[in-house]
Amino acid sequence: MDRLKILVVDDESRMRKLVRDFLVKSSFDVIEAGNGEEAVDIFYREKNIALIVLDIMMPRMDGWQVCREIRSCSKVPIIMLTARSDERDELQGFELGVDEYISKPFSPKILVARIEAILRRTNRLDWDEILSCGCIQINKAAHQVLIDGEVVELSYKEFELLTYFVENEGIALSREKILNNVWNYDYFGDARTIDTHVKKLRSKLGPKGGDMIKTIWGMGYKLEVE
Image 1 (cartoon, helix red, strand yellow):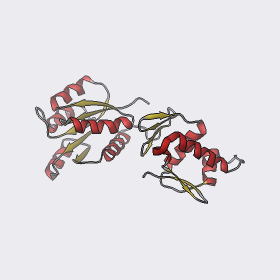
Image 2 (image 1 turned 30 degrees about the vertical axis):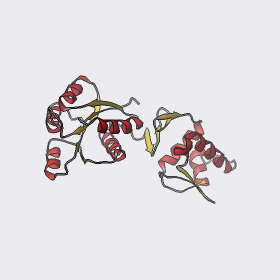
Image 3 (image 1 turned 90 degrees about the horizontal axis):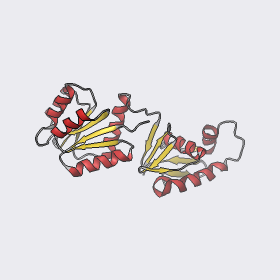
Image 4 (image 1 turned 120 degrees about the horizontal axis):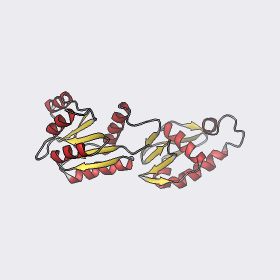
Protein backbone atom coordinates (compact mmCIF):
# COMPACT_ATOMS: atom_id res chain seq x y z
CA MET A 1 0.00 0.00 0.00
CA ASP A 2 1.32 3.47 -0.88
CA ARG A 3 2.24 5.71 2.04
CA LEU A 4 -0.47 8.28 2.63
CA LYS A 5 0.43 12.00 2.59
CA ILE A 6 -0.33 14.14 5.62
CA LEU A 7 -0.02 17.95 5.39
CA VAL A 8 1.08 19.43 8.75
CA VAL A 9 0.50 23.19 9.05
CA ASP A 10 1.90 25.11 12.03
CA ASP A 11 4.03 28.24 12.35
CA GLU A 12 6.08 26.59 15.13
CA SER A 13 8.82 24.47 13.56
CA ARG A 14 9.27 22.50 16.79
CA MET A 15 5.61 21.48 16.75
CA ARG A 16 5.80 20.47 13.08
CA LYS A 17 8.88 18.33 13.77
CA LEU A 18 7.21 16.62 16.74
CA VAL A 19 4.12 15.70 14.71
CA ARG A 20 6.19 14.76 11.64
CA ASP A 21 8.46 12.40 13.59
CA PHE A 22 5.52 10.45 15.03
CA LEU A 23 3.73 10.27 11.67
CA VAL A 24 6.85 9.10 9.83
CA LYS A 25 7.28 6.35 12.44
CA SER A 26 3.70 5.31 11.62
CA SER A 27 4.60 5.04 7.91
CA PHE A 28 3.00 8.25 6.66
CA ASP A 29 4.60 10.73 4.26
CA VAL A 30 4.61 14.23 5.76
CA ILE A 31 4.56 17.60 3.99
CA GLU A 32 5.06 20.71 6.14
CA ALA A 33 3.81 24.29 5.84
CA GLY A 34 4.80 27.15 8.14
CA ASN A 35 1.80 29.39 7.46
CA GLY A 36 -1.68 29.38 5.95
CA GLU A 37 -0.76 30.78 2.53
CA GLU A 38 1.95 28.15 2.10
CA ALA A 39 -0.51 25.44 3.16
CA VAL A 40 -3.06 26.45 0.51
CA ASP A 41 -0.36 26.60 -2.18
CA ILE A 42 0.90 23.14 -1.22
CA PHE A 43 -2.61 21.72 -1.13
CA TYR A 44 -3.35 22.85 -4.68
CA ARG A 45 0.08 21.77 -5.92
CA GLU A 46 0.36 18.34 -4.31
CA LYS A 47 -1.77 15.39 -5.34
CA ASN A 48 -3.55 12.95 -3.06
CA ILE A 49 -3.12 14.63 0.33
CA ALA A 50 -5.00 12.24 2.62
CA LEU A 51 -5.43 14.50 5.66
CA ILE A 52 -4.46 17.95 6.99
CA VAL A 53 -3.30 18.75 10.53
CA LEU A 54 -3.99 22.48 10.79
CA ASP A 55 -3.06 25.00 13.49
CA ILE A 56 -5.49 27.90 14.01
CA MET A 57 -3.29 30.78 15.15
CA MET A 58 -0.86 31.55 12.31
CA PRO A 59 0.44 34.67 10.56
CA ARG A 60 -0.70 35.81 7.10
CA MET A 61 -3.62 33.40 6.89
CA ASP A 62 -5.06 31.68 9.95
CA GLY A 63 -6.43 28.16 10.18
CA TRP A 64 -10.05 29.27 9.77
CA GLN A 65 -9.26 30.96 6.44
CA VAL A 66 -7.30 27.91 5.27
CA CYS A 67 -10.18 25.64 6.23
CA ARG A 68 -12.72 27.76 4.35
CA GLU A 69 -10.51 27.85 1.25
CA ILE A 70 -9.95 24.10 1.21
CA ARG A 71 -13.56 23.24 2.07
CA SER A 72 -14.72 25.27 -0.95
CA CYS A 73 -13.27 22.58 -3.20
CA SER A 74 -12.38 19.50 -1.14
CA LYS A 75 -13.69 17.20 1.59
CA VAL A 76 -10.18 16.13 2.66
CA PRO A 77 -10.20 15.32 6.42
CA ILE A 78 -8.95 18.20 8.60
CA ILE A 79 -7.77 18.07 12.22
CA MET A 80 -7.56 21.50 13.85
CA LEU A 81 -4.97 22.25 16.54
CA THR A 82 -5.37 25.13 18.96
CA ALA A 83 -3.75 26.51 22.09
CA ARG A 84 -7.14 27.89 23.19
CA SER A 85 -9.79 25.67 24.73
CA ASP A 86 -12.75 27.80 23.72
CA GLU A 87 -16.06 26.06 23.04
CA ARG A 88 -16.95 28.70 20.44
CA ASP A 89 -13.79 27.90 18.50
CA GLU A 90 -14.63 24.21 18.58
CA LEU A 91 -18.18 24.82 17.37
CA GLN A 92 -16.91 27.09 14.60
CA GLY A 93 -14.51 24.37 13.53
CA PHE A 94 -17.24 21.77 13.22
CA GLU A 95 -19.46 24.23 11.36
CA LEU A 96 -16.65 24.66 8.82
CA GLY A 97 -16.43 20.90 8.35
CA VAL A 98 -13.48 20.10 10.62
CA ASP A 99 -13.26 16.36 11.40
CA GLU A 100 -11.43 16.60 14.73
CA TYR A 101 -10.46 19.39 17.11
CA ILE A 102 -7.45 18.89 19.42
CA SER A 103 -6.26 21.33 22.09
CA LYS A 104 -2.57 21.91 22.78
CA PRO A 105 -0.67 20.49 24.53
CA PHE A 106 -1.59 17.05 23.23
CA SER A 107 -0.10 13.57 23.09
CA PRO A 108 1.47 12.90 19.65
CA LYS A 109 0.47 9.25 20.01
CA ILE A 110 -3.15 10.26 20.52
CA LEU A 111 -2.94 12.54 17.48
CA VAL A 112 -1.63 9.66 15.34
CA ALA A 113 -4.41 7.41 16.67
CA ARG A 114 -7.02 10.07 15.76
CA ILE A 115 -5.51 10.42 12.28
CA GLU A 116 -5.60 6.66 11.72
CA ALA A 117 -9.20 6.49 12.99
CA ILE A 118 -10.32 9.22 10.57
CA LEU A 119 -8.51 7.60 7.66
CA ARG A 120 -10.12 4.25 8.46
CA ARG A 121 -13.50 5.94 8.64
CA THR A 122 -12.95 7.59 5.25
CA ASN A 123 -11.63 4.35 3.75
CA ARG A 124 -8.18 5.83 3.06
CA LEU A 125 -6.42 3.49 5.45
CA ASP A 126 -7.03 -0.25 5.24
CA TRP A 127 -6.88 -1.15 8.91
CA ASP A 128 -6.98 -4.82 8.06
CA GLU A 129 -3.59 -4.42 6.39
CA ILE A 130 -1.86 -2.04 8.87
CA LEU A 131 -1.50 -2.97 12.56
CA SER A 132 0.21 -0.82 15.18
CA CYS A 133 1.09 -1.44 18.82
CA GLY A 134 3.56 0.74 20.67
CA CYS A 135 6.76 0.92 18.61
CA ILE A 136 5.65 -2.02 16.44
CA GLN A 137 3.95 -1.54 13.08
CA ILE A 138 2.93 -4.42 10.83
CA ASN A 139 2.06 -4.05 7.15
CA LYS A 140 0.27 -7.31 6.42
CA ALA A 141 -0.01 -6.70 2.68
CA ALA A 142 3.73 -6.06 2.31
CA HIS A 143 4.59 -8.69 4.96
CA GLN A 144 6.76 -6.07 6.65
CA VAL A 145 7.49 -5.24 10.29
CA LEU A 146 8.81 -1.89 11.51
CA ILE A 147 10.22 -1.08 14.95
CA ASP A 148 10.33 2.70 15.41
CA GLY A 149 10.31 3.03 11.63
CA GLU A 150 13.16 0.54 11.09
CA VAL A 151 12.50 -2.65 9.08
CA VAL A 152 12.94 -5.93 10.98
CA GLU A 153 13.44 -9.15 9.01
CA LEU A 154 11.28 -12.01 10.30
CA SER A 155 10.64 -15.53 9.11
CA TYR A 156 7.14 -16.35 7.90
CA LYS A 157 6.15 -18.04 11.17
CA GLU A 158 7.71 -15.27 13.31
CA PHE A 159 5.68 -12.75 11.30
CA GLU A 160 2.47 -14.75 11.84
CA LEU A 161 3.20 -15.08 15.55
CA LEU A 162 3.86 -11.35 16.01
CA THR A 163 0.73 -10.48 14.04
CA TYR A 164 -1.32 -12.73 16.29
CA PHE A 165 0.15 -11.09 19.40
CA VAL A 166 -0.55 -7.57 18.09
CA GLU A 167 -4.11 -8.47 17.07
CA ASN A 168 -4.65 -9.70 20.65
CA GLU A 169 -2.81 -6.94 22.52
CA GLY A 170 -3.31 -7.15 26.28
CA ILE A 171 -4.90 -10.61 26.14
CA ALA A 172 -3.29 -13.58 27.90
CA LEU A 173 -2.78 -16.32 25.30
CA SER A 174 -2.19 -19.93 26.25
CA ARG A 175 0.35 -21.99 24.30
CA GLU A 176 -2.51 -24.18 23.09
CA LYS A 177 -4.42 -21.18 21.78
CA ILE A 178 -1.31 -19.84 20.02
CA LEU A 179 -0.68 -23.26 18.43
CA ASN A 180 -4.26 -23.50 17.24
CA ASN A 181 -4.26 -20.06 15.68
CA VAL A 182 -0.71 -19.67 14.35
CA TRP A 183 0.28 -23.26 13.63
CA ASN A 184 -3.34 -24.35 12.98
CA TYR A 185 -5.17 -27.32 14.41
CA ASP A 186 -3.27 -29.84 12.28
CA TYR A 187 0.00 -29.18 14.15
CA PHE A 188 0.95 -32.18 16.28
CA GLY A 189 4.42 -31.12 17.46
CA ASP A 190 5.66 -30.02 20.87
CA ALA A 191 4.14 -26.82 22.24
CA ARG A 192 7.66 -25.79 23.28
CA THR A 193 8.24 -24.77 19.65
CA ILE A 194 6.33 -21.60 20.64
CA ASP A 195 8.91 -20.80 23.31
CA THR A 196 11.67 -21.17 20.72
CA HIS A 197 9.92 -18.85 18.26
CA VAL A 198 9.15 -16.29 20.98
CA LYS A 199 12.80 -16.26 22.02
CA LYS A 200 13.92 -15.61 18.43
CA LEU A 201 11.17 -13.02 17.94
CA ARG A 202 12.18 -11.10 21.07
CA SER A 203 15.78 -11.08 19.93
CA LYS A 204 14.92 -9.75 16.46
CA LEU A 205 12.56 -7.08 17.81
CA GLY A 206 15.26 -5.76 20.13
CA PRO A 207 14.80 -4.61 23.74
CA LYS A 208 12.06 -2.09 23.00
CA GLY A 209 9.85 -4.40 20.94
CA GLY A 210 10.85 -7.71 22.50
CA ASP A 211 10.13 -6.60 26.06
CA MET A 212 6.50 -6.05 25.07
CA ILE A 213 6.06 -9.84 24.84
CA LYS A 214 5.46 -10.88 28.44
CA THR A 215 5.74 -14.46 29.71
CA ILE A 216 2.81 -15.73 31.74
CA TRP A 217 4.38 -18.54 33.73
CA GLY A 218 2.64 -21.89 33.39
CA MET A 219 0.30 -20.57 30.68
CA GLY A 220 1.73 -18.69 27.70
CA TYR A 221 2.33 -15.09 26.61
CA LYS A 222 0.81 -11.64 26.38
CA LEU A 223 1.77 -8.61 24.28
CA GLU A 224 1.59 -5.50 26.40
CA VAL A 225 2.59 -1.88 25.82
CA GLU A 226 4.57 -0.42 28.73
